[in-house]
Amino acid sequence: MKKHELLKYFDEELMDKLFGFCYARTNDSHEAGELCSDIIFALVKASHSNGEITSLYPFIWKVARNVYADFSNGRRKYANTFYEGNADEVLQYITMEEPEDNSNELLDAVYKRIAFLTKAYREVMIMYYIDGLSTTEIAKNQNTSEVAIRQRLFSARQKIKSEVEKMTETYNKPLSLDKVDYVIWGIGNPEWGDPREICTRMFSNHIIWLCHKKPMSAAEIAEELNVPTVYVEEELEILTKGENGEYGFLHRMDNGKYGINFILFDKETIEKAHALYTEQLPQICTIISDYIEQHKEEYLSFPYLNKKVDWNLILWQQIFSMSSSFSDNVEKILAEKYFAEFEQIKRPFSIFGYVDNGKHYGAGWDGIVAQNICGYSCISMDNIYFSISLTVFPMHSRKSVKL
Image (cartoon, one colour):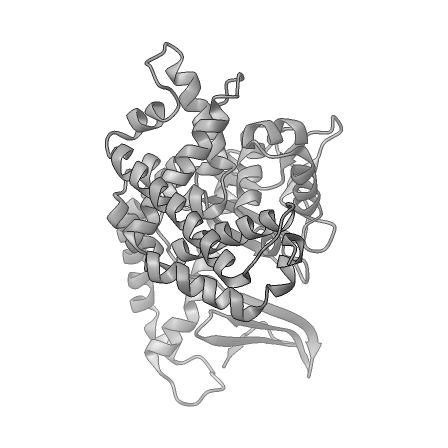
């Protein structure tokens, strides 16, 4: 038979046999998959050459054994040359044969090439060379064998070395190697189109962080992230329009650059802010507890619709009112004392956020308000996530009633 007829015999049964051949020799599914792909590639390449095949399956297994021999030889070379040392030393080592004065430039180039590796190779390179994890720790993190991790490191190093040697430009370490997450709070009622819903990708987070520092154009962002501009432009469009097409995390300025559309704090700033509040918490709690104790009888005598009066439930229902009053007073003092000259922006929904510092304080509520319902001038339903309180204002009375 002609070699170009070889592809006719590629079926599921043959693929299973090839994968079994590979797994029996590697004992690792990832390596078996790589070896199987190499064998299939060799067979496809053979099908595009001239010549005759006297016996089909002996030919296929001969090709498979030859590819496996090359595969094993590559692993032996890796085992002889692999070096587990200082991360920067290793990265410089894989880019040159002899020490050179431009090692920092080569290291920058290596960082850039890591960002363009596929996910499997990129992750192990970052964890090993940048995070300083051992191959044993990486294997545990990736839920695979240490042999597979070593093979990925070897393949990635070879790829980076071959590409860096061709590069003449100097690049900085790409920001896409850093992980950044935000904690974002909303104030108001967005109805539909909460802009937080579309900020779920790491790519979005990096673009927002760059625009937080200063307004930037799509080309400037692309250069910082080492990403083609077309992808940045698409993401900027999403972040500008938001969920409802009207309000997003970013806004486009007259000069074509993009600026952040909300307040975003870094870790250091939010840590200082939290420290200030934490320092005052004992005094605030004392003021609240003293006030509650002094007015306990008034709380208990209030005409609740729920006839089963429970002191703890009453105090739990007050959390919203206390927090709201405290927040309103803080805003009032800040507005009058520090921001009197600034006009408040009118919009139904505002947000602020900060870089995740690993400390989550929880809390929050939402609710709905209606007027002129069943003889009441105003009804408000507040949900503190675990408790619901209903406040109603009669048409001819200012007294509130709580469920």
